[in-house]
Image (cartoon, rainbow, N blue to C red; front, top):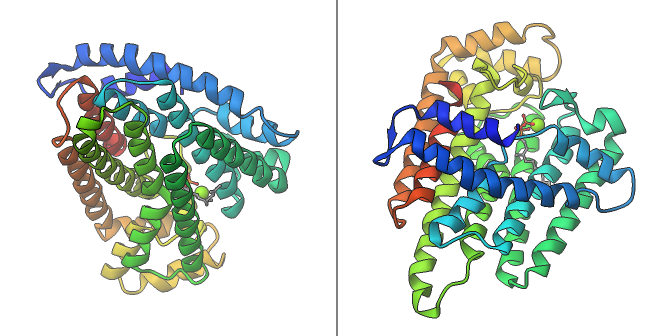
Length: 350
Ligand code: FPP
Ligand code: MG
């Protein structure tokens, strides 16, 4: 999505007052602050995806050019801005967070055998699955190299831990897909791993990207923790809303019922199966490919249980928890913008 359009989505979400400031003024600030900085990160991304042997970069660029919300870079940029100001290191960690995200998507679309992403054929469909995987590997190595070059060992160590969490989350999801095993505990582990972990890294890395006076180290550490908590709840809300969109749709352009076809035990399915005991067997047959064309009927049965209202409430609770974490930060324009981002992401279904 172009940057101006991105800021416009914030504008749409916040016609009212936010944090005492007039939203229109605030979003004008956002257009200047986030827009300019995101454009610089976008330039860094365009250069970084060109690294490596052809045809890997072509596959990576195919995904990059399709656009995206760039939520993780925005989180890193606003975290740094909230604590003092965006630096060269901030732009690098913002870029790295998106490189990692793009790498996971190039892999994920192979794992999910997905035909489309962001309204166009996936890199796997255009260049083949092998190129998609290796294109993702290129992004991953570039991201690790760029992080190492920053000379802050903690950033690299936490990134490696985050990568493990992403892979574990995806593996736990895969495990459940074989027989559509429904477990709330597994769902929590999946969303923490495959989504929240990278949001946490982006927010904390943004906080770590600014120079801090030794006298302020303890205060900065507590602000970094608050931003990490914000990122975690934002990530959870984001994934829960994403899982809901699969059933109730929205203006996002995402295809409906893909999770159902892929046998993903997401929260709407888990809650619905608790309420409609016969449903699980039908869903399992669907995941085995034995109910072709019945996805809409099954989705309607899920919606009829009222499960989506529960899931929406859970996403809203995560958004509230994210907003509460912001109270632990020094108030200011960047913090208000972080609140706007959280509210907007949660409102994707409104
Ligand atoms: C999208 O989920 C996928 C993720 C958020 C994470 C994918 C993680 C991996 C493939 C493992 C780690 C990979 C690397 C390179 C470290 P989704 O399938 O529910 O959403 P979608 O509808 O957007 O595909
Ligand atoms: Mg997928």
